[in-house]
Image (cartoon, rainbow, N blue to C red):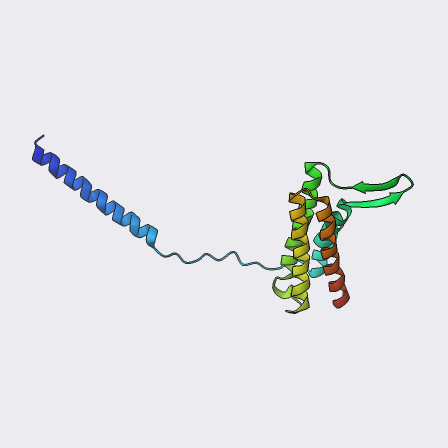
Length: 161
């Protein structure tokens, strides 16, 4: 093949490649509309959330760590295995997510104390999660106070449904 033909062929290929890069660049620079999450429709009542998620999860966190005085002396307990720590962490996460559920849609009773107390429960659950990740039994115990205070204050203000 002659040099002129090679130059022509290379020029055509470079031209086509350039067009390809321009098209690819235009496609990637297009503005896309933000994708909103799927519409959520609350199904469970506050009572169902309390009985099915919050109650069992809070009980698991409360009972995970403790001490009692017996004839033998002070007996202490805390999670020992990875599976036991994971179970406490799962319960703490359930408390956090329950707080989020209580802040959805028609479940929000008011914008003052309901929101504040739900967020306090979320805070307590996050404290427990952090303590579980650090394998800190005293931290799990301390998180129980925040969780318990949020529950007591909420139940004092709002009638149980």
